Image (cartoon, rainbow, N blue to C red; front, side):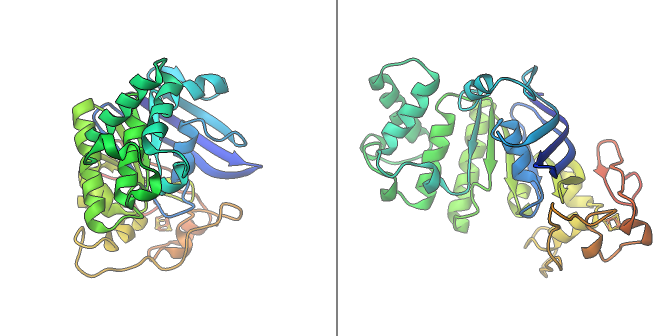
Length: 311
Ligand code: SF4
């Protein structure tokens, strides 16, 4: 495993937002982390990148054999961008409006590689070509506002991959894009992954996205793992009522009629006792309101009193 996260907990000022989650991802593989907003899915990935300066992080994050929890900030900075990279939902907020996209990719490259500006600029053009931007030499001289949403996301991918990282964390990378462009970006990530043997963590609220790309799926709810299995198992035989609810709201994955899960996700400030999903769960038992279900199972892990251990 290039990344192995074990019993990761993250708190901000005494409020726990991630509660003992574990996952791993290997080169050439994609892990989908799924959940609604506030589920802790983005917080977990930011913890992997060492981007939570104000958080208390417990557990273990081992990247290529090196423990990152407690590692010096300088070490994390040097890994970020060079060996671990991240792309976000909104590329415009990550791109500086005043600089050309070529200069921004070149500068990101020069942060980690000691090269001349000229070599870095050539690298930027090469990367823009790799992510499918037409006329890359000319477009490298343009500013971000001249690019469409899909093209800006391609620029971010070019920047993220310029130093040839081993791990790419993509946090809702296609949420702001229309369906056609979304498919193109997912295909691009898959192609680059296959070419480079990248490990990818795809963070999304959309099981439809995960169905297209993930080898393995971790479903988070209220900061905890609800279900964790290979993608085929999750889509064929989801065992947790929350995962089943998510599947029922994805067109074409489980059924034709869309059903939204009633209610809203819990606040980390006042999570419900017992199973955090119980106020929204149609199958809740009395025990669910008082006792937290353990995460049980081998290859197919489920945290639900109904299941015990999944088959
Ligand atoms: Fe529903 Fe109870 Fe299972 Fe939670 S533990 S998902 S409330 S049945």
